[in-house]
Length: 137
Image (cartoon, rainbow, N blue to C red):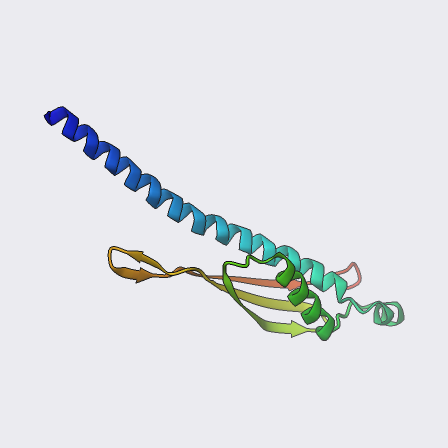
């Protein structure tokens, strides 16, 4: 009987460990996905907002702030998870030379772990500078 009781405890411990690993994996996977999502959207949005007429006249890269904001928010809203609440903050956006800073904070669901309410808030910050061959050196 003693050996059977130890077997039950090992099974219960194994189930507990698997649940904890699945919980931790869901948060780390979400953080990685959010980082690459913000990075790719920032790159695409800065390329969408290039002012090509200014570039043709003066040979310098310049972006349109409003177009960048619009493109970033639209793309992010299309791709972001519905289950998570996001806060998007533009820390710095310069038109010439083109530089952007975006901070995206995500609030996940609240979990009760042994009576304590726990939330995981993740912040991803991206800074990007658009360069061309004329602006280097």
